[in-house]
Image (tube, rainbow, N blue to C red; front, side, top):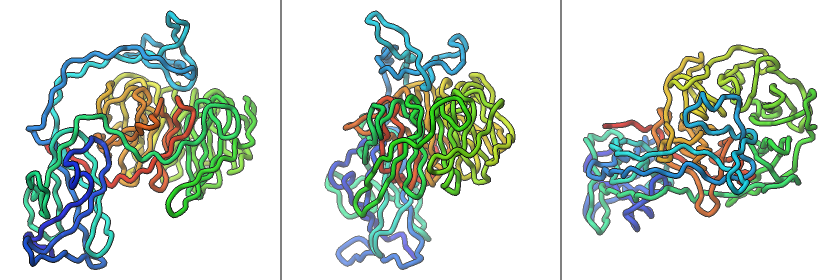
Length: 489
């Protein structure tokens, strides 16, 4: 049994070297538990089957609260020629209207170029809540543990170790002064800086029409076998890649596009958008925005069947739940259609509007372990969550550029802990939230920033992002160990 007299030693770049971190950055931290302070102490041994501790960060502490001066950003920014067009919703119906990244809608400026209209964002006084964020711990050997810390906001956080069978009350971790010593206590101050993740692994493709090249990629689907399929909207095809893991890296190879003819006939593609492997992995489905149906193909591209004719107005994102139901985001109808794997229509939920339980140009969808549908609500700048019966549960996010805010969200992915990854298209970043919608971190790379990310796919600790503005697929290492986040105050 672990007693309260035990002390905890943390080590890692964040704690040992800097005492200062960046919001959203992921910091590996090693943990060793000692029997008692002093020279006679010895490390605690974790036998096989021993219940491991957990690590919790709590903050930002109130003294770290900050204010924002009123600040107004420019409302227009230059954008490249893949600028999208309206999804069928009139501009007069939409507050903070922003065009949908499916087609072309350009507004000519004085120089004859195209601009993207972005809403005005005003930063006001923000009262920071205090969060309690719990991280899982993995065992490196019988004495050494490891976790990966990430902080949702700037300010001072206390880091707690929660020991099994202990009577620890409150936070056992306190400041050790400038010289960090072996102890059960430390705190860390997070820098007020834009958070960036340097875990970019690879970049697949570039702009063009040749093998392995894209023009406005929309979505990605990955299989355990290492196959990666991506819908290439403007090239009107599905590209296929292969990922091969070695001991120290991942190698990618391109096989070009699958032999699917472009067009409006049976088995052809006109504007491919969402894509998803069926659970068995030997078949996949593709949403065709302009043909207004979903096509089923074998792994090598042989057409099998189609469904959704007469039901879908403009399908985009796809997801499959644990019961084999196929969820199709009908972008133009601002609703979600549900089908069986044989194509039989089951029902529809969601309706157009600006209310909390409404949708306006939804794009992508993910299904968590509870069977809840998580939907990116593009024009309402939010993420909406519905239960398995289509009943609205809650939403999170609003229009803006700060952490937890969106400028036209698109891609959705769900990690093994039900954390929600959201492609923030207008802000060119990916944000990570817990299941309840509490912001956790950003994912991006300063060396090769995202530009208009759309579809996301998460497989075996690797995140694939359809970077539509850069006409490529970005590949990131994803190792989020967060298991629960609760707002304390």
